[in-house]
Each structure stands twice: as C-alpha cells, then as structure tokens.
Image (cartoon, rainbow, N blue to C red):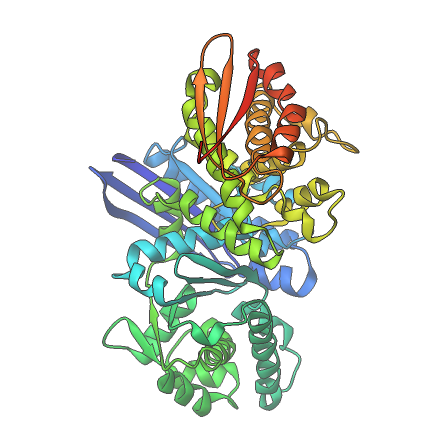
Length: 504
C-alpha cells in the first residue's frame, strides 16, 4: 500500500488491540493505537472455551472498533485476526460468528505458522544488519501471553519453526493453584520442557549466535530493566528473577510499580527467557519493540514483503531432503533438466514464474519417498511433502507440489478426490508440469547422470531432445519412451529423444 489508511485488529490472550495507520508514498504514520484489556486467555487456557460473559465484553470492545472503521472509512481496508486465545478455544467458531453478527467485523484465525512468519518478516525489517545475524545463526523468540513463537535460522536455512503453548498467561493459569513459594519449581519445569523440545528438534542450538526477542514480554522487561540500547543482558534477567522468585504477584506489582497483570506474568516470563539463554549460551538478547498489531498491519498492507521467499524455500527443500537421505545429485540434475525444458518451451506451456517454482520444487522432492519405500515412493513423497511446515510457504502451492510429485509416476491420484478439488486452471497447470517433470526425470532415470546436458529443436509438429551423454543412456531412453505419452496428450505435439556421445 502506497497511500491511504489501513487498520488491523488483533484479539489476543490478554487484550484486544487496534492500530490505524496512514501510508503516504510508502511511509507509515500511526494514527491511533487502541488497547482494551480482556483476558480471553484465562477462559481458554483454564476452561477450554470462552465464556459468554467474556464474549459479550469482546462484542462491546469490537463495536467501538467498528465505529473507528466507520470514522476512517476503513470497512474495505482492515484485517481482524485472532491468535491462541480464540484459536485454541472449543467454541472459536461461535465466537467468530457472534462478533460478525453483532458488529459486522469479520474475524480470521491466523494459522500458527503464518503468525510466526509475520513476526519473522517484521523483525527482519526492523532489526539493523539482520542478514548478518541470520547468516551466523539467529533465534527469534516471540514470547507473548498465549504462546511462544520460535524461528531459528542459520545461513538461510530454517532449522526450526513452531508456536508452542508456553505463553506467560497460559503458564500463570496452569500454576495458579500452586503455593506461591513453590511456583518457581513449576516455572522451572515448564522452562526445561520448552528448551528440551527445542534441543530435540534443533541439534545444533549452541551454534546459534544471536537471540532476538519480541512480543508483549519485551515491553514489560524494558519497563523494568530500562536498557540503554536494544539489548537486554542475561545478568539483569537473572538478578530480577533471583530477587522476586519467591514473591507473590501482588507483592511483585507493588515492589516494581507495575500492573497486577504484569506482576502475575513476570516470573514465568523471566524464567523462560533465562532457560533459552542458558540453552544457547548467550549473555544478552537483542530485541524488537514492534507490537504484534504493527507487525500485522505492515504485513497485510503489503508494506513488508519477502522477495527471496521462493529461493529460501528451495534451499530449505534440500536441507529437509538430507533428513530423508534424498539423492541430492539426482534431484539437482532433474531440477536442471526441468527448468531448461520449462524455459525453452515457454511458448508452448505459457506458464509463469510461480509455476516454474512448483516445477523446480517437485523436481527436487519427487523421490523423497524412497526413504520409506522404493516401490511406492511416489505415494510416500506426496504425504512427506504435505507434512512440511515452514514459514512463508503457501499451503496451496505445497498441495500442488505433492500432487505433481505423486503423478511423476502415476497418472491418477488413488484413494481420494484430491484432483476433483482442483480448479480447472490448477488441473491444467498440474498436467503441464507433470508432463515436463516426467521428461526431466526420465533423463536421469539411472540416477547416474549419464546425460550431461540437452539441446532442444522445436517446431509445430515435433520437439526433439538431443542428449549429450558420457555413455550410452540405455535406461534413460527406455524410460523416456514410456513417459513421453503425457507430453503428447497434454500439448498435442510429440517429443522425441536421440543420444549423442560427447566424444563423437
């Protein structure tokens, strides 16, 4: 968005917030930032549902926000989202329907990985020299009332991403019936459980050099510790925790002159930060002061973009492939042939850059199912791909990649109606890309890289592939002649193969 106003509403675990910003030639000016405390998380984390009393309070707050949308004429330029307090509630859809019926505001539940991705992009945009940190290894820790959002990157590889149920309010609700002088032991257990999960899925956590914090907890720490720059030292967190670990919430609030709510969540906040810092063996934490509503607004108004997302995803596909013993040399060769076919046959298939990405990803991942079973590897490839979760990926794209990878060996999806759920355009795209992938895969059917390169001769009546080979490609030619039927049926033109030894 270059010019105009945009609004974001965020229903969180401890408050409902609204931010209205004005954009002028890409520059943002915050017009209003409204915060209404409402502990929906107390209901969800302790009862499993949102009470009608809390829902009615939310309705009254949202009516006032609706008035703001009217005042600024923003009913077509807003985004309203819910995080864990609604997402985890059993009656979440009733909550959303009630808000829509009573206020006209349409709520969306933000997916956990999208939430992590929004925070990653915003921090990347906010922290100076972020690329330097990311190359050496960066742990992004967003500690809020409901959840802990984690993103661990090193040299462009996403080592771990997740949203875990260890938010400060959530933990405070879990331990509220424990005696105050023993609560610190419960905090120890939760903190260790969190870091154990991180160590389990990110084996090289001690190699990560930088910790960057964000979220509502940062505002609390900043208020108390008052750092002189955008970093908080571990020793300050340790001293604060040591001094107050046996205090009850009321005593903490009075001693530090903070709100009752902040007094309640301070100790679990401090303990979890210390556990992560100890695990990483770091002495300080950088932080971003951006609020989540501001992060959301920048994201949904398209002020921040991830221009390198597809390049990063391709790099991560190879990284994930290592976990499944992927034949990386074969994957790179098939990918090379697939992209060369795509580029030189542009006039025939008429597909764009996103479809090229789908083809490249499918070429890399189509054999990943070998890890489970050679004979039905295409089936296993499909559901392994569907299980991938990483920030910035498009679920629909991943579904198409899984289908294309499945169909590189089969013509039809068995046992479900996946293809019937595709739009006509998606179905045609899948058929085109499958036809190209089958040709590319056949050119390294032996997995021995016998064919070193290909040249194409293209006409309206025939496409001829001349393969430059280091040996006679017996297997490749046989498989090519079996797989080229899809190309003919899709594009209406035959494609032929001839081999030329590179010493001829």
